Image 1 (cartoon, rainbow, N blue to C red):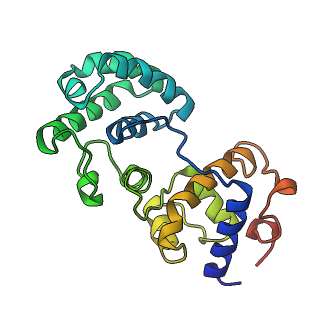
Image 2 (cartoon, helix red, strand yellow):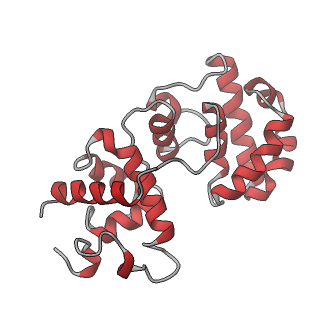
Length: 212
């Protein structure tokens, strides 16, 4: 089976196993997802979803957050960890959105990458979830699972994994595929315990099980 064939099979099986694939960060506006993605670094999505409620109660708009003191933002987001750097990035990012983009999030990948605290993973998430454009989000679940399954060969650097997956994943499938990998990685193909291969929908095609 070629990697392209394997990729299509994996996509089909994950679709059947997890028909509803969505981002687990709560948001009702693109700029809020941008904030939450920054807070989610080394923090669970569940905790971020709790913390941002207080943040948006106090600063309900891009302009309000842009005008906030970074120290005041930090006081609220501290439970997410790395509070000082996250608050600094959020403040700087919101200022740019307010001053240069009329409080809107740009729908251009390269423009997103220029925003403070936004890397390829975050930019891809915004492009896929907000704007419905082709995207591949190489988070820790994506990197771990694609290596285990055999879609990539011992590649751990996020950008290199992303580039390898672009070659074998149909563009329109990338965003939902990565969301499904997150669910599968949390529930079945786990990192901190032995993966539950006995109940995995991919166990007969997974390279980790000796399938080539």
